[in-house]
Image (cartoon, rainbow over all chains, first blue to last red; front, side, top):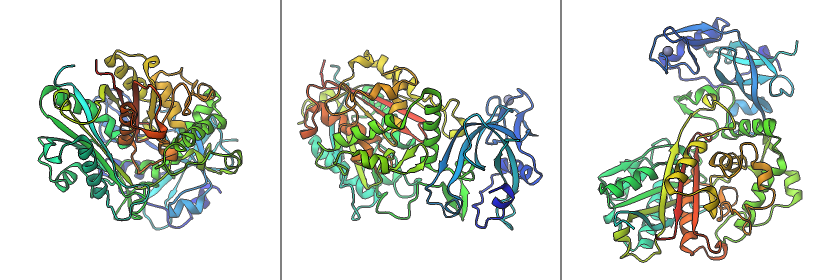
Length: 141
Length: 388
Ligand SMILES: [Zn+2]
């Protein structure tokens, strides 16, 4: 399955979006992965907090390269979730970004391996949900 | 022994593995009264209460539970560190007794996880039909508890060559302990055929690598050495307790094979004036077979990455040099959502010498290590039966 097909699937769960989290999801709508970067100390963080967790400084939402490396990955065959059951087996991973943050992600494609590179793909979490999100594809080009 | 040294004087378990007649609070109450009876006291003596449920403070938070039990505590601690909650409150409980802030503390837990179908620990929390809480970030990517632990197991295999055989040994050992526990659920040995047939739920974790889901509750009562002298049970002394929480979500885990056990373990051992060689048995939260392996490394029982080969001589088994989870653990005895309290109850039962068929001979010390969240919040407690 590719990202375009994934985002056409009905019934994707949508998140409750706190005020501090809105810029991330707005970024997904614009096709960019926004990572909070502190104006004072320059450090990055994810998930977003709206303020720097180390120094309390204001943050900018900086577009990341949209690439990452797989730190670990598992193929999930069993889940109780109504939506993810329709996608299973799927690949759930911890992804390390060059922007010095990590995030979990769903990887589309065959048998992803630790240390492989992945790229971010964006789309609406089921048509009409009004929330855009991110999945990852293997970068084997 | 100082007259205000904390001592465990009562332990109790509620009905398990299936108890459709009990709510989570019903388990807390039944286990608490059983612990009080075991201690030879009534709950009216309790002036400190420490408890947290697994239901997101809906029916079983500390205040609700305290009122349900009719307590009038002057100290209450409902810290929700997941499955390590009972271990993580122990430093506070011990300090409160030493300082005189409290005389008698009840630590309790209960869950109707198996009977209450409304509860779902699998895929995150829904509020108004939306994924809520910071776990939402991982839920959007398809997380489950098993999948998160699988990430840790996979990385451990990748870095250190840990194998399915190593994981299987933890599961086999749990069944052998359970065989000696009449109350345990899975008492038959794990056969090669069963191991072979066990499918991946989230690779590398198979069904045999996962703990059970059942109803149950437990309670433990601490008081002063002075008071304990008038009570019926052989005193078991918590020598030391420590906790560490370096992260909560998997995305904040700096290194997938390093946990707070590496902080809490050495701290607790140093406080107790002991080394790992002095520990006679382990009660470590076995949410999954990978968990005790990673914990043993952090605690210092073996080097980092060495836990797989370390356990292959059978040392974790009932007749081994370092028995693990002598009641059968969460893998084979009981796992009602959060297992922390049961680790300490089993340690106390063993050190009293009252563990029946599953008694480990001549045990003088036991280490309980609770792991909450995704190996996130680690609590370590060291017990002895030697009243020095
Ligand atoms: Zn900063």
